[in-house]
Length: 246
Ligand code: F6R
Image 1 (cartoon, rainbow, N blue to C red):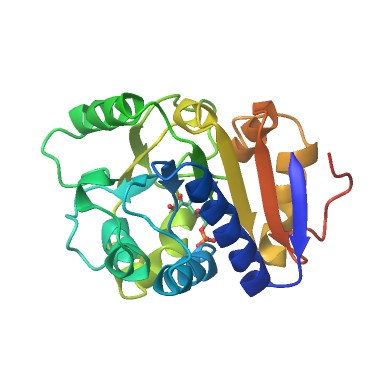
Image 2 (spheres, rainbow, N blue to C red):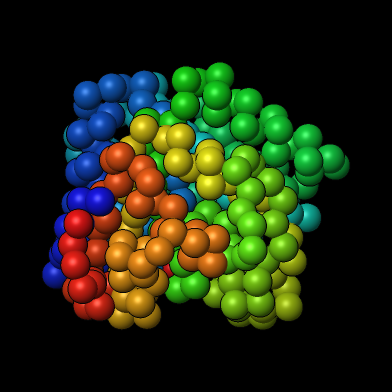
């Protein structure tokens, strides 16, 4: 794992946006895996700025988001689709036909997961997967458990994860859907490169365990140790418990 430590979340966001811009410069049709949450906000703000300044052209880029809540449709203000429209899609020249999202309102959610996995494969796979990390070590909505799913699947969200997402649902955790759809660990590990971002001391313990601890389904991010091309972008707080950098 390559580890880069930044002064603050803004510096980190700019660096990740540059990493994405370089990928797109090298390959204008790059397939990007995208994440939502608080951590990538500075990155998306910088990508909007870079696009407005003519520094990045998204017209051939293909995107797949990691996850989506089940039981709400794309127009719901709490949906990750809506988040992406507001934070990135509506402000850059992505071709809507190249934007891929899990449909949490599909009548057959299992079939929806199969469709998504096939759609990723049909593009040749993800070139660069962007990840945040939950304080419990989850990536995507792959929650700590006795077992993890390899492919895109339905997930029962942990109470902590529902609390962490309450802001999208009027601050009320009970309004957060109990179920979600998520790329699986195998889907994520098949990406050619992974960039994981973490900010704040609240993430420091799980970052230390993900980098230097055992590989365990109890900390899904630890599986990234098995990938050949993972970069960790951390601020000082998230890096504060690292005992070794390898
Ligand atoms: C979001 C996602 C989640 C978040 C994680 C961290 O698409 O897949 O795994 O990346 O919950 O969220 P923040 O960035 O809000 O701390």
